[in-house]
Image (cartoon, rainbow, N blue to C red; front, side, top):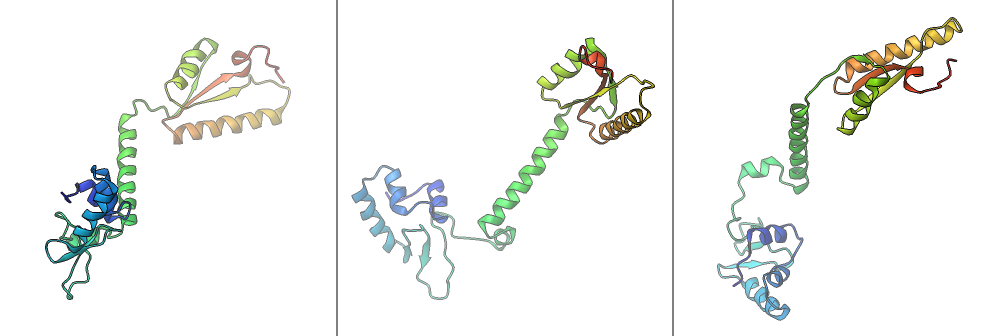
Length: 191
């Protein structure tokens, strides 16, 4: 039988496989596939099939449109306006898929933070290690206890802490924590 599957028809219409290759995939020997391709070229309905693309062309001189065989003969204007090109269809599919994934990701999020959480050394394992193992991004701001050593350093630390608060407010699905550097890391120098 020269009937092909819907999948083979789609592959042939895109030029991925030839009619002969589709027949071989169906179980025909290469010689048998060539013979079937020759038979199929002449067609049963006054049409000829291009074996390189699998497209059926009607002999009607008024129609220059190539049409697919096996139920794909009608291409409506609505289908043509959707994209017409495989590239346009691919782009539309990718955009739709992206929107769906973003929606799913937003729906699947369980907790929003939006603030910097001060932690201590005993909290580190739970707030940082465990949270990051579960796929959550955790930003740690190592702070220092204010000292009289340098006013410039204190101003710089204040700016970093302010920037961390702004980022925490903007990226609510990222966990921001702060911990004094001497609590987080043993023997961390004060200066």
